[in-house]
Amino acid sequence: MKLSRLLAVAALTIPMVALPGCIITSAQILTHFKLPNPFTINSSVPGDQSERVPVDLSVDPGADYTDNKDKLKGLSDLAILGTFTNVSGPAGAVEVYIVPTLDQPPGGAPAIPPGAILLWGPGAIGAAGAPDGVRTVGWDESAALFSQAGKDLLISEVLGDGQFTLYTIGTAGVYEIRVDDGVLVLVLDAGN
Image 1 (cartoon, rainbow, N blue to C red):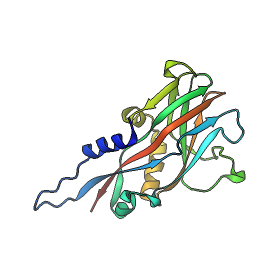
Image 2 (cartoon, rainbow, N blue to C red; image 1 turned 30 degrees about the horizontal axis):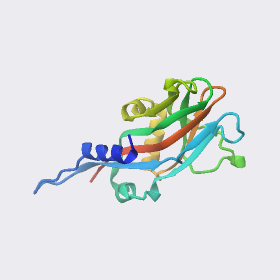
Image 3 (tube, rainbow, N blue to C red; image 1 turned 60 degrees about the horizontal axis):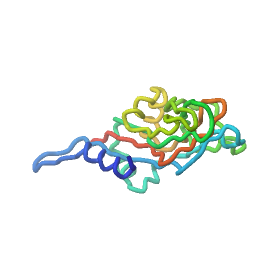
C-alpha cells in the first residue's frame, strides 16, 4: 500500500470531531518520518552492514509534530512500514535499533553503537528468490514487532526533543537487503 493511501486511511480512522458547544480536550496526531528510499544493508560491504538514519521530528515538514509539541501526552500507536527485499543471501530477519541522540558514532561508520536498544524486530524475511524473500510490512504486523524497551525510549524521545537515530541491520551472517518506501509512522496523543 502506498504511503499516501496509508496515511489517508489512518487519517480517516483518527478523526477529530467538534460539535457546536463541545470543547475538544484530547486528540490524536498522525506524523511520519520517511526513511531513505531505497536503502540497502549489505554484510559484505564495509560500512554498509547497517543503515544509520538520524530522525529529527522538529523539522517536521507538515508541522503536525511541531505545532502540537507542547500538547503531547504520549504515543498510542506506531509502525515501521516498507517493502523488504532479500537481494542475495539466506533467510534471516531485519532489526531496527534506536539511540537517543543524533551524534555520529566515532569514525563515521554506521555500526550499531554500544548502548543501542532494539526498537523493532526481528522481522523475518525469506531467502533471496523465494516467495517470502520480498515482504511488504503492514501496520498490524509492524506494530507487533516493537520491543517494550525500544518503545519506551522512543516515547521518551518523542515527548522530549524529538531527536534520535535509527540503525537497521540484517541478522543472517551474510545478507543484502533492500528497503523500499520505508517510513516510521507515529500516532501521538495530545490534549489541553
